Length: 324
Image (cartoon, rainbow, N blue to C red; front, top):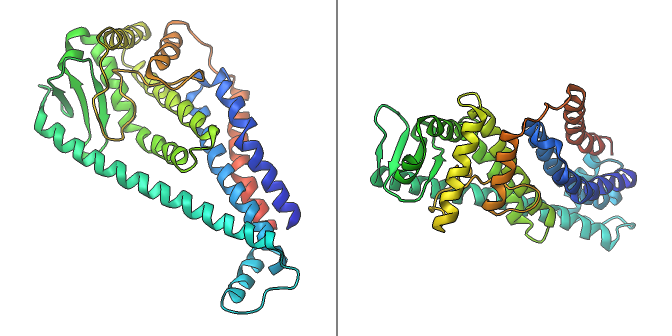
């Protein structure tokens, strides 16, 4: 069990710093955003499991020869039985840390989901009151706002894509079609759930720089995935022009984003933050460059290797815990 605890701790350290830093700086991610997103999710999940598992495994060493036996034995000691003679303070500290960390992460995720759901419902109600349906375009709502705004609000049968009059004025029909396809891709691919998970991780561990780096990188990836969907509807340069026009209009007007529920970042300020930073302005350039300058697809061997590594990250901590 000591060996398993050390290996799990080493995995947690690697996934806490070097691995996310290298991935955030990698250039191949824009060529295969879906694959990169899978890897980011694997890193986050495997890192959390390894961190908790390392503490738990070490803390259970005095109580049994395996994690399962130790957990069962620990239950008996919790109801009044004397602790084993070789129990150290560090064992109790590790067990307490594992429980506190696990509960903290779960409660934070629950609170984030509840808060986002409340905001989403409130925003849907406001949009229903303050917007008008776009003729012959079901699911599209138009708000009277001078700034170019486009975003989506998830809600099952009540999902809506919200556009502003300012957006309709500056985009032509083809550009508008690309923006709508982009926003609908967010809804269809449930990007808001992915973003909520990483937002929860960041808010649970605000002192953890990697959590902020991961949230920024994932915001870029979901925008690229939505762009890829829009590219099936309009030409790449049409979409790039739409992104540039919207960003330029916001920059010249100095407008602030319209308050919204937790939905994927809107097209009005293409929030696809790259490794260089998380501000919306810095997120426009990677998207436009990717559309204007053709990029070769990721080599199938590399794609398979990344997916295999993602699967290994998820399986290895579980196998170590079972074998401990």
